[in-house]
Length: 589
Image 1 (cartoon, rainbow, N blue to C red):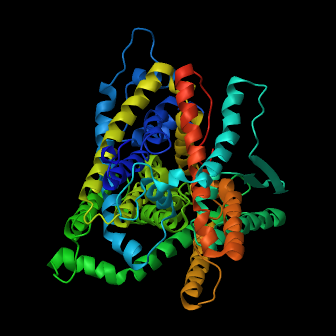
Image 2: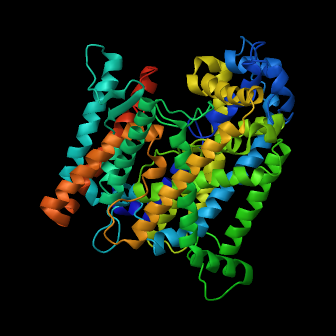
Image 3: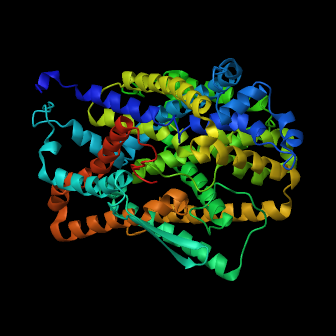
């Protein structure tokens, strides 16, 4: 291809950012969590669980479809000759669209505000941007060639071949049973219900190569520390009172106490980061409120005044929506702070550590209910908290990390004011919302939701409203609440100590970034790959130095591209052949 026909670097970054922002919405992002939950409260109601008596009266009429047939056919499929009842979904989807647009607007505007602090002042690494930057490729004069230098490196293709072959055996096994897939997973138990998973994720291994050694060490070290803590609790029989924290912990055997420690740590991470950024945030306020001429926002995706106005306005819309859904007005600030700590903290961790799949150990709805008490929230407040599970419990719902990584790419390429990038990301999010919702409804009504992915259409709705019903039937007492506050405080104190030592003691070796996510489900899958990536980099730097590290960069980029490409190839093959159930993951299962 002639170089003149190639997309320019800025255009490639725009396409890439639109892609990663849009990917936060379908399936594991927003829509596959949201749509099944709304009718699920009615479909999974039985005389035994009494959801009709304790939950249904408190679901706002506008928040979920009410037609019994529309609900039944969503899970069981349409009878022959029937059409999809789109009209049953117009009002609830319209109501939820208001909330989701406000949530995404708040996320994007907050990243515009913090961009200069993270990228220019603190100079965070952003490991996830390394591969796309190399794929764009520029020659010595700063112009892009038709084929990037990366793709001309034999080391790239050597790294590419390893995961492509390994997971190619998994794809072939689905077609030819006599082909044995190469195993990349093993689980062993420290003590009965305290497992340790050894799993090889080539993309994670590749990205960790671009992470600072102390950060890579922190990630796998704190996972083993958290596993050890749960092991000790199991050995001595220690349990904090209460139950039902479904979204906390990793692969089992985790104590909820560890999850509350992580929430305290996440809060300190965010508050400490905001304190560190206080001068920058003061400049943002001066520019937004007084038009201070000494503060330059000409290189931002939007002016500070627009970003701050959008953040405040969208925050008020979110608060009003939650109030209309039944959440007590006094509980809304607490819940929004918990959600902000989670999403903002994870965006920071991804920017530093490059673990794009990471999630929080504790989620905002559970933390809010156990912190404020079920009786004080009331039935209406508990149902409202349950509805927030659809958007406030999974990192893949957030577009913060995607947005800030896109802004970092724009900065690396010298794009002066990436307004088009942010506009493109917003358009991509809107299109993804519409197409993902329409596709999910079509699939559910065509094939029956209960015949599709089990967690989305059965596990998630029953988990959400099972949690709500449990807290209605078994109110939380001080005996349950106080230990959770105690461990939240312990986590905050430990995190504060780690961050203080990191800042004050020059030779302090232990980074804090792994502590808030040490015992998450995702870390249980990727800790070993992180360890390998850290070990490889340590050995390479020790024996070959920085030149050796730079020379081997293409190999580790190949590990990332090989597994992702393998999954893409098999997806195309399966579509052409009609094969179903051939699952080749791109990072973690």
